[in-house]
Figure (tube, rainbow, N blue to C red):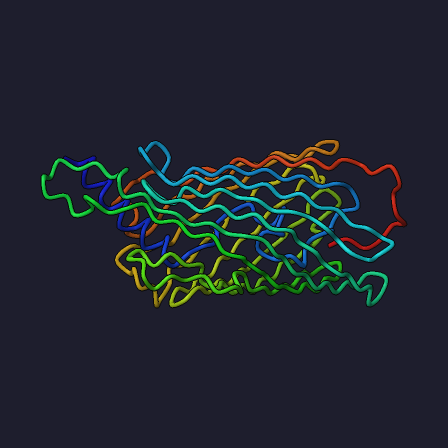
Length: 313
């Protein structure tokens, strides 16, 4: 009986999130941001490959799972970054979304250590829900007879970033394309997401650096604020904490999305490996006391012709 209640609450929460959130919520987003802000495309002179897997509500059957791939590089002759981003997001028991897009940024060196970047992204997004995957012992199942719904549409993003050695500031809007089908009950759509963020980078000692950060996200009536900081040892090892506040205007206010996240990782040669665990603090703990686990792997492959040294945020 307990499992049925958990699965039902998961369905309510996931469908609610499915209708309102089209972007995936990721903790280790600072290491590769092009899926949220195309202006960060090309913040590496190497070919940068970034893989991330996320399991929401670890240990719970049919829990949401996310897989993300980002790849990009910078081309000095055209002062531009070019990349691609792909993700698969299994939002709940029966629904998922797939997004694939090309990203581009144009970078302006305002000074030797001051960079302004504008970015755009274009691609397609598919959202689908299959009610037949909901199994119920109730003879009068509410979803019985409902057909699978799916919609694919073009999708566009725009963003800007400003960087100096100790500060990075960015803003972006995702899902600028129209994506709505009034005839469908589930209202499959990709709602615009608005991001505003800043990250500092300060030297504490010859061995220690700290990078505090703040991220504001708005989607419809949902507003979230994330506050965090990472400590770096010899610029090779890191660990940190991040706190995501509940939304004061969350239309699903009975399900408080506030979380506390612990992160750690290591970088060696051109490899970077990281892990994070989100612990739910709000009423979502009533659904599952387990949090979300993330594993991140990135690789930078040196290019044959390395451009002149430049400021990279």
